[in-house]
Image (cartoon, rainbow, N blue to C red; front, top):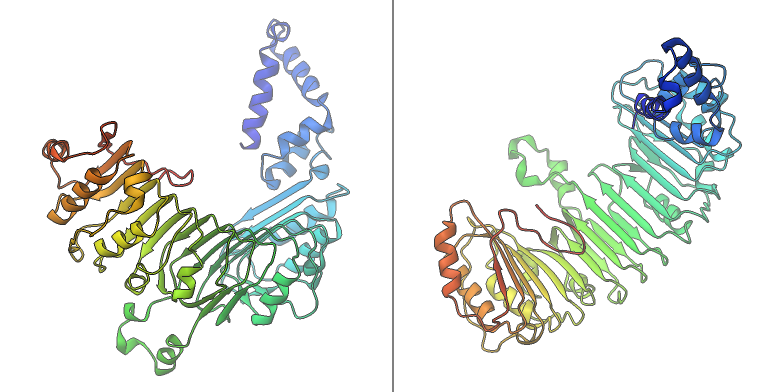
Length: 468
């Protein structure tokens, strides 16, 4: 909500007053202004809370009553993409700001902002005023900016976000006793020890979000936090096969084959998301608290990595070739909800059957298989998976194309799922809806109470997220 929207909102409330509506326009406007100015500071500060600081500062010209209201706002937000005076404006605003405590400072500077601004001074100001929420995003092309050491000893900081051209340099002991949420988006690290010190200084950290790029100075990313409950980790490496060979220098080729590793030692972890990562993994073997795992893409996982997921309750898995060999050996004793998406180059039907055999409590299964890759080969299992005969209630298929192998799987699941209640099928555009419906209706179903749905957009009920 912008400042003008807030202002019009107040105007409408007061303008609808029956007494004011009967007064002449000039007299009514004066009374409206008086009524607004008579509002308590707390309410005016609530209005300013919903607007960027630049607009909040602008309210100081409205009247004497508004002149200093913004200076008591507990939250300051600066978003600039090209102003040459942004440094002066932010520094002057921090100088004039009079609130005894600064709860939140958010700064986002775009690629066209000047590089000579004193970011460190702004951080120092916030730290000295017991900041709880600090968010800095530097999108310019200058060299990464080093954050003052005082940030890493701020005992009031609860939520910290550092993004883009920021150098994480924790060369001395750090202490962040209140930090619960930490986000590191495409930053650069001085070295691996800086990351280790930052995380080890956060004894109550619950949530960690990491986005990495290939020039962040790290070969091993270590997450060793005993209190951590949620980890979201994504990389954006430039794959060597996407670059023409004559464009790659010898040193670049050698660097591309250096081992990258992710080490996770967080026994309290309950929610794990890994997206587009191309590294070798070394995870602790025992993670008994993990409830939800979203494995978007893991290029070369070890068996130890996959075994660390054996206690999950909700699993979203992108199946790659390197995972196939482990599908028969890993037991998912607690798994009740499974979203299965195979790589186009994987013969996935047999691995899927192994996974079903090893998931005896599964209640919800969704297959998201794109046609156009290798056609999977169907071999009917010798034994019916326990989850089909005793537990499976919801089955969905996204991108069903009506191929023979797909029909075999569909027939098998319908014929053997005794507890099935809902079947939701999302068809490819190449499928004829009427013909496909007739095919499904002719398939034998052991569960007489199951409903067969063909929505235009399939809704996947995967731990509260709607997938379109």
